[in-house]
Each structure stands twice: as C-alpha cells, then as structure tokens.
Image (cartoon, rainbow, N blue to C red; front, side, top):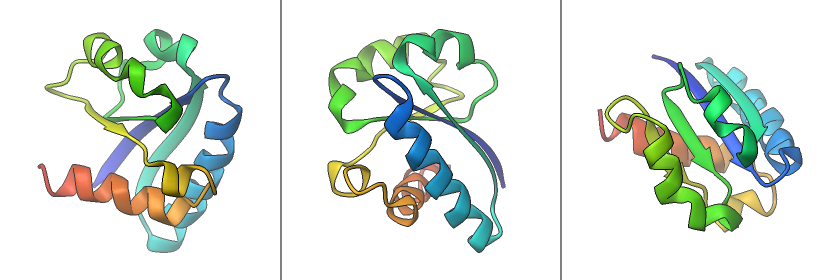
Length: 105
C-alpha cells in the first residue's frame, strides 16, 4: 500500500526530524510511504493528495480544525503521541501510523 503522509508541528522543525526518522524506518520495512513535514500554518496548502495527516502532540487543540481542512472521508487524521514524538522515534511513529491506517481500512 502506498501512502502520502503529512506531519505538522508548530514551525515544521521537529516534524522535519520526525519525518526523516519515519522515512528511514519505512525504508527498512520496505514500505512505499511518502512522508513530508510542514508547519501547521501551511496545512491548507499541502492537504490535497494526502492519505494521512499526523499532528504533533503539542498541537492537540488543532485536531478539530485540521479535520475541517482535510476531507476526513479520504484522509485519516492522527494525533501523534508524546512518548515517541518527544524522542523522535520514527519506528514507534510508524507503528502508530500503521495501527490507525491498516486497522481502519
């Protein structure tokens, strides 16, 4: 399964590091995932064509607004967990992504 994933955080910096770690983890697992990072201010510009939106845990207050921006019939919105986001653990983030996407297909 090919997925187009967008991670958003406040400025795009921490999600950029998380994205790099998730890409490495996906490559090791042989997964065809396109993972990119943007600041939350850029969400509307990048919402088209994504399958999954992952939001930094510190932006939980934006979850409802993000769901209004994306078409939730086509885009799964996931609030990332602090336990892996705070240490930028790409493997744990990828596990969380797969649990939410594969289990709900």
